[in-house]
Image 1 (cartoon, rainbow, N blue to C red):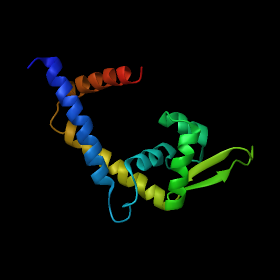
Image 2 (tube, rainbow, N blue to C red):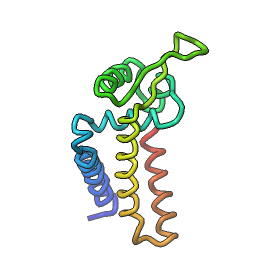
Image 3 (cartoon, rainbow, N blue to C red):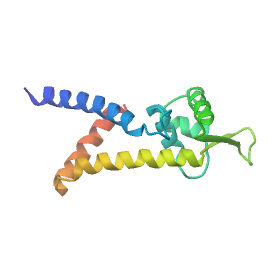
Image 4 (cartoon, helix red, strand yellow):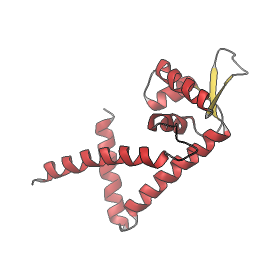
Length: 143
């Protein structure tokens, strides 16, 4: 098998595995009704100051209309709350509730465990090569 075929098989397999494992890892009793997409919206909103819908949509590379559908669901599930900007009442801000912050932390811990399992047996040079290769892949995927 040549290197291109091997890399293709590895990348396709990793993409599928990460999606499957992430979906399973976020499911707990508290977060049983959260989808992977929900978790990515929660992550984009973050735990800091409230964010406007446009900036969250931009971070997720979706339209504000698409984000609105997800946010509506997350509000109903109790993970996100909406408010109006004090400076401009037309601007809708979103932030995480306490439940949303717990989900955010749960998701962050999953990612931390995944990264740790990848790098724990790599030396510093191997880590640099991995980062360089993944950055190149990111550039390609974001074209």
